[in-house]
Image (cartoon, rainbow, N blue to C red; front, side, top):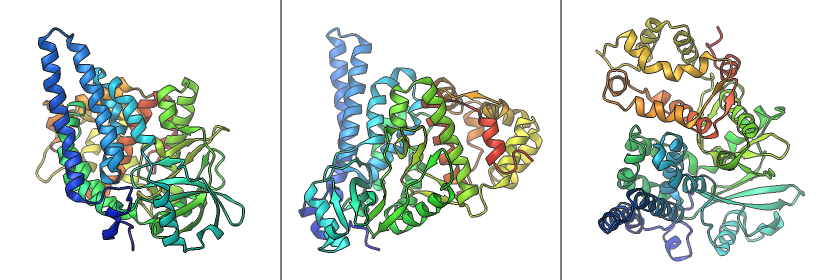
Length: 450
């Protein structure tokens, strides 16, 4: 497979993704260096009498702006990492939320585009010199630009309006380089996300790079989702029109924006409505399609004018041909029923408890109960305070927090499921959505209603 990123001339021909590893590493290294410089400057301002809160806020805002500028410019793995981290914004301490929220929203939903000449060169290379006979209309201004590719609006030769996703030249090399260097960013995120270990997140993203760069594989997944949700009155999945190694063409889906805009300034009714649709889509996918959409950041969820939710970007999916493992539903139901003896035994059988580890049922109850709470109620309201409390609780050095977390193992087969669920809870908390969560579980989580 050609990934559009390993050709030596990319670095000399206006590549949208800076090619050289040393250059990209230097840009990533500028983030902690810049943060240190701003912190030193802030200390100087404190000495001459500037208010502490004002200095801290200024440092945070400038750091957030630099993060967006560098990650957005680099795209590739650096921006993918930023987007993955941004879904956890709901868990940030209150004093850090505001300066970063706007920047995280932009990371989720926008990025600087690549030059038009580069786009046309890719089309000619992938579709042939007569590419305009197939793509008879094309808006050179991208409708969206993200971590691996950008999207243009156009018209296919059969008259259909289409979205054309173009992979950035250099994306493959950039992703590999970024994810090797991403540890340089851990100091910046450690303060804001004390309960999240950055390295495993970067390692997991690295494992998914190959799949996300494979547009043939993405086209296959999107076709399956489009078929599985074809008759759904509330969910829209664009059809696949054509694809090459580095171009994916799908039917155009008109939208008012993404969940990022609803998070920023949506009405309570919009937050509830789209939060419920978001949760229903995540849980319905494994049953209908045998796959779980595994890139839960708000920019992938589009707000349709008639109230439906559109879903794009199927580069990262968890393939679950038999659906979600029924043991998840059975153990969650046991926890709801306060049968923690069954929960502990089940976690041990599934490999969640490391060999030789013993956990008291009461300790496990104290550790898991807050996460079980949404399943106990017919209607539950997610919010930032709830998410923040859980993130801080499990990072405390106590038996019911870090003491238990350190004893729990995450089997490889559950990595993507865990990522999607934790990211999904974060998005629901950002939305502040009130949803019939228990009913969604009874409808779509195997084993929960048995």
